[in-house]
Image (cartoon, rainbow, N blue to C red; front, side):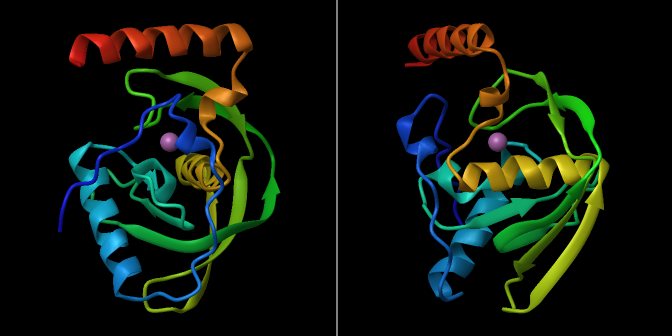
Length: 167
Ligand code: NI
């Protein structure tokens, strides 16, 4: 396994939509393992393949306190959503930035697991937020796009400054 470098906002590669996985082969299995390792190491509660510069519809999530409930979703799709919740979100591609975003309270997501089985998960609370956040990444969207233009400009400036300091 290996850690993968995570792209940072506003890298234009984060805006590209990811393609569906056609075959869950050795490359996809390795990608999923590396993404999980990268997410746990960061540490984060979710990671989508475009964040590691791979344009496939693969997501890993673990919202458990014990960090042992890994969910790997291939080609996830939100098939139902209802209600509203607003909570503070962050993103491994936007380090150090947290802000409130409105999301659906409950979602039902269909996906394939690593054994190529069709699965359906119904989620609410934090897991529902995380699913929506990660699936958005697959469509080239980042949570900061839900914020005002002014806030987005401030975030860009702050991250540009951080990049200079660490470069
Ligand atoms: Ni994110």
